[in-house]
Length: 141
Image 1: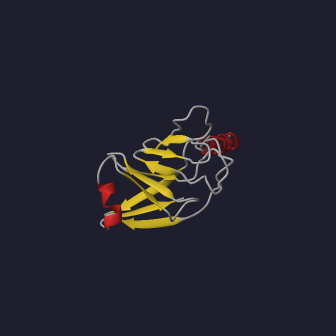
Image 2 (image 1 turned 90 degrees about the horizontal axis):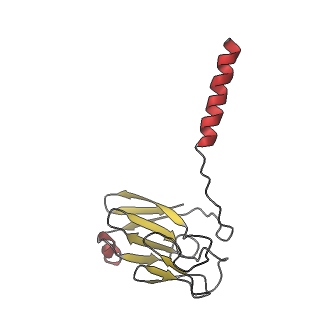
């Protein structure tokens, strides 16, 4: 009986720990890189992020830089390289309002959600982590 209870506990721990893993589809085009960038929202170049619906591009961090958007309840961060092909000279997307466009194939994405607007694209924009301490915003992966 004692062995049976131990086996049940061990099996439960293994089952629960495997059940918590994400089943996200890995993007084969964008590599996982580690970085951390901190910005001060009080500085003039980031002041617009204090308002809902505003978005900016920051060149440091990520593969080709990072887009930040204030969606009204929080600030989101996305990779600036088009997620549907390997990074190259034209893969850095440009920001136009709340839409990002890649100049390689004119792929378009909603910065509000990271989802593709152009039909037939397999991957959404790569999100990055955000933490906030007062007016200091940390963007990291």
